Length: 317
Length: 244
Image 1 (cartoon, one colour):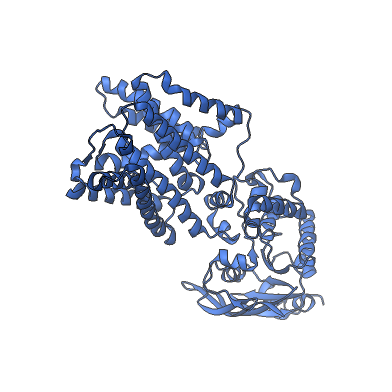
Image 2 (cartoon, rainbow over the protein chains, first blue to last red):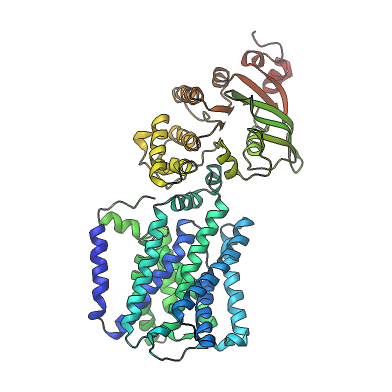
């Protein structure tokens, strides 16, 4: 298992040398969505609190860094921390409302969706942040402004982000925090009876998850050079974030990565394939079918099966 | 010296008075039995003591501290742990991880918590099953696991809610022994149990509830022949018919 991970890492490090620029852009998205999926995994997978509003954190993070850069010239390298912090603040608000008042299951899903939608509508209507048109970032190619002429730089940043989130999840998994999150996911009442301050640990998971997701917003803004409310805050973005860890195996370290490595190329290929035949949006149908298949046949996701195939044990909490 | 004191506890669910004006004391080192017919309010009383329900009236003091208004996790950390009548293992975690959750309350670092959890599994006779996923354990094993998790939080007082229900006679006997050993090791116990032989064998004193009210209290021998207890369990016509 360890050797397999090391080999995979070496392949990922060497990959840009041989990729076409199109393939490179697909791989950048693949790593980036693996990162967002891993960030979501902390609260959605390990703690089992199904947020379908993580787009809100991407948007808040991205808008914060972009506005700071456009208005004050602050480098996005610092701006992304501010964006992460604001996203974490929003995470605390959503988490507190949801957890304090005991919203579970579908009700928590609805709460998170509603918050993301409020953000989307607010951003669309506030002219100071570009309204419905959004924000455009002028290309300068200045690395201090998080801009690079060579797309391979984005690849390595996305890879670093993915490793960062995975490292955080790994560290959580083997500490009290991770054991408590698993207990909360399995049975909150029983966890509470065993001395777990469930409100506190769910909020902590939300803070870590929303902060990391907020960092991702900066990458999104400065990789695409634009932020549009419907794209960053929209429900499809939240679904993109959630679907990868679920397909790969939520609450496992490899799940979000595996899910993204399966789904991102698949979605690109099917988008182009169906797009050429004029069936726009048909790739979403393919997504839906895949999700149904996973829920029916692999409810734990792909990751445990891969781990078994590689002969390794699932990492214990 | 009293470890736990409940005074005037009451709880109503809509039109049902589940517990009415319940008062009792658990002394340091005592094993107190709590019995009563189904629906008498025993589990509600446990939920009031462990913070899962807030009483409408009354007070609970544990080691001189009021517990009313505290959340269950805080009460657990003060040294009052409970089990659930319908066992609630973390089904996809291993038996060891299940117990580790409890152990982490006293040992915040994972390696020490794991070591403590292993020792507790050993104590309850589940060491051989430590890597089994909790959902795959037999009922008897899950009952032991439930007990082990609570025990791993190092409680001064353990509330056991029907840990023998559903067990066959051999398993019940083993559980009686286990509860006796845990008590002998210095843990005070409040025991809800329907198995009369077990309660009579283990308890120093017994409190009897019926329709939310305490109808009798005393040593096992006195409770067995108490007219109100016989009436509550068997009906009025049997009072006096029981062999002495």
